[in-house]
Amino acid sequence: MSPEAQNNLDRVLAKASGSASTNLLPEQVRSWTLLQIDPDSPEYVVGAFEISGSLSIPVLQQSITATEGRADILRSVFKDYLGVPLRVVRSTTRIALEVVDADGQSDDELEELLQTTAGSEISARFIPDQQPLMRAVLVTQRDRNMLLVKASKLVADFRSIEL
Image 1: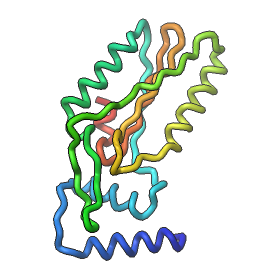
Image 2 (image 1 turned 90 degrees about the vertical axis):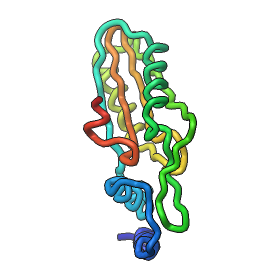
Image 3 (image 1 turned 180 degrees about the horizontal axis):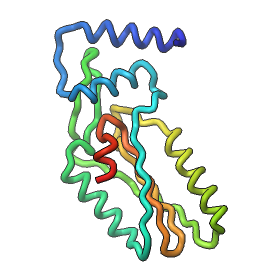
Image 4 (image 1 turned 30 degrees about the vertical axis):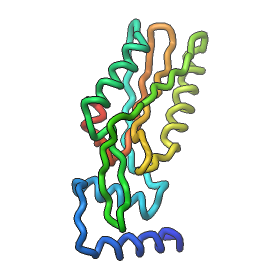
């Protein structure tokens, strides 16, 4: 463990020994603590979904917006208040749908684009006290679409990402 990671671990453990309470679930406390120790830790879930046929991108964006409006967890940020992790629900957020047009690319080029896009998403960090803690990328090619969804484990788990 690097000296910086050890210092972060010592700080988090010292704060955790206090008597303050949190409004997070145990799994969220675990993820939040790991992110405090190592901001680059892989505390996220990823889903990839192939959508065949015609797809209306504005309708997909409206669906994402409607979901975040109903699910307060998707409008949440996670703050450190004197060493205690707290979930704060915002009234609004905007999970943008990034669209990558792959029309005209061969199957090999499409595969490379998907790998590059997924790699880029996986390496991108979430910052717990900033929104949104979920991202979506749609790679389109004629009537083939691949939707990549990445969410922080603070707001999703493997089961919920598939819903």
